[in-house]
Image 1 (cartoon, rainbow, N blue to C red):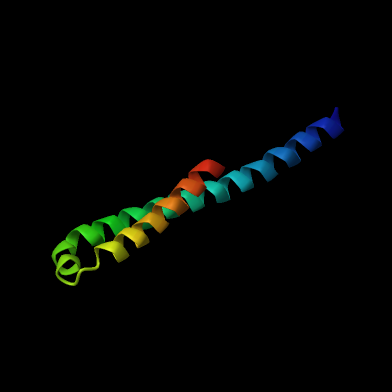
Image 2 (cartoon, rainbow, N blue to C red):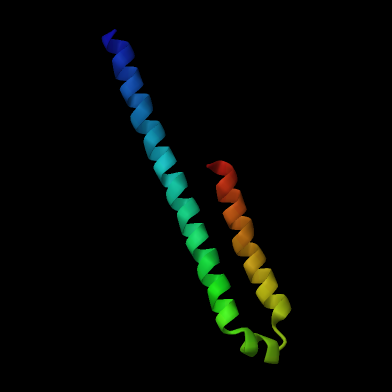
Length: 74
């Protein structure tokens, strides 16, 4: 019984730590994509005047891919 309780405690603590790291990575990816989206919207005219729409799409797609990858892990 004591061994089972010890294994359960070890498993719970280990899994909780792994889960905490995964959730932190997901939250950071969400924050980065939201920040980048807001920054792009605020600078829409500058992006439009320098013809950088494709670059902005590529960068934002990278943020979304990272967010999707983190969401699949969680």
